[in-house]
Length: 215
Image: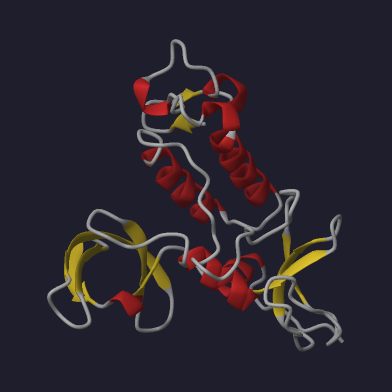
């Protein structure tokens, strides 16, 4: 846990203490005993170490996590309201790997649907838990909303993604209009062009330039 601007770092253990730490990273007294902040940081680091997150995504999500630490330190439930109460991913928070289904006998433990051979998935072999790319992307997007000041991903015309910051949102329009800063320029766009997180396919594409389907 640290700040790259000031070159200041602290371990997860010390981050759970409430003495002699900058106010911005002190855990909320109401939630400090739950260890939710430490679990979020640890899972983020494990995901990066296992290859689930690219370095760009890791830094992006760490920045969002640190930005939320001034308020309540709570665990975000990735499941949409009313869909499921559990959290998407390995039940024991083990690092997960992105892979292609070797045959059509694999199933998604989240939606319980079957997948075709070569389908993009993410899973934990230690717990035999696997999720499809669609459920992965949907649950992550449902974990929050894009509002004024949000840092998100803008979808270019060619389908690639670039970091963007939301300057304002006009909810009086249908659909709402978002003014975002992309690569130094301000443009108007709709919610469909914005994402909180990169799709799993994009993460896989960065790890594998030309992924080959299993024979």
